[in-house]
Amino acid sequence: MKITQSQKIKIGLFTALGLAVLVFAIFFIGNKKNLFSSTFTVYGMFRNVSGLQVGNNVRFAGINVGVVQDINIETDSTVRVDVTLNSNVRKFIKSDSKLSIGSDGLMGDKLVVIAPGGITSTQQVKNNGQLAAVNPVDVDKIIAKITGVANNAESLTAGLSQIVAKINNGQGSIGKLLNNDRMANDLDATVKQAKTTMQNVHSTTTTLNTDLKAAQSNFLLKGFFKKKRKKEIEDSTKKAQAAGTPQQ
Image 1 (cartoon, one colour):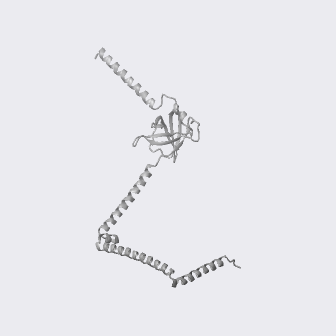
Image 2: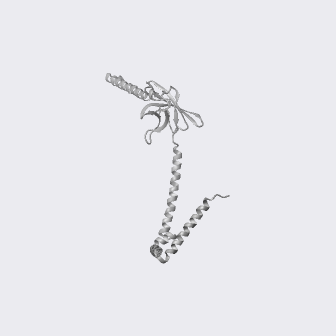
Image 3: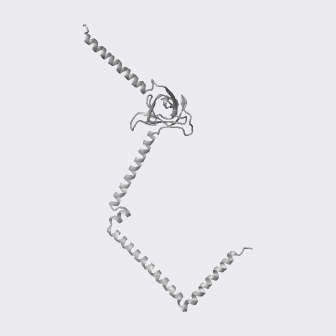
């Protein structure tokens, strides 16, 4: 079948459009992965990378500045993470900066976060240099602790429910007291009687003090109280002298 001129034009346009899309995709992906820009590499040593993958973003001050280049297990407790960064941010990353692993949003992909340095060193990080790593929180341990707390709370709630049920049913001393009107009335009467007794004691004490002061002013008993006071002074003086006399 002979291809017409219009079909050739359509095929040419479709091919050109496909090539343009392919070039744009390569440029876009390469730009995201820093394939066409000057870069440098740093690394950190982690105990756990929490699902971090090669190609995930690296952020500094909330801006994507690189990608995770490589992840390798060094020992049974150490994982090396190499990241490639744009050269234009190198002047901001000091040798005491720190790497940590975070999430892109609540449920997003994992990423590497670079914390600013300059506290203990103002020197720029070197190419292929190592930065201190902050290990991520162990989510499994946190979930286990939360589960334990929830189980304890459930047991405590069940226990409290049983106690409240017994009280409502009049079981135990508190239950009988709250549900028995007679006991409550007797307790109220006892408290009122105790208050009345204390008021009487206070009144009696006040009366005795008044009578004692009056007796001290009575001319018949004044001599008795005067001699008593004098004797108390003499006894106090003797005790003071005895306390101040050194032992031989």
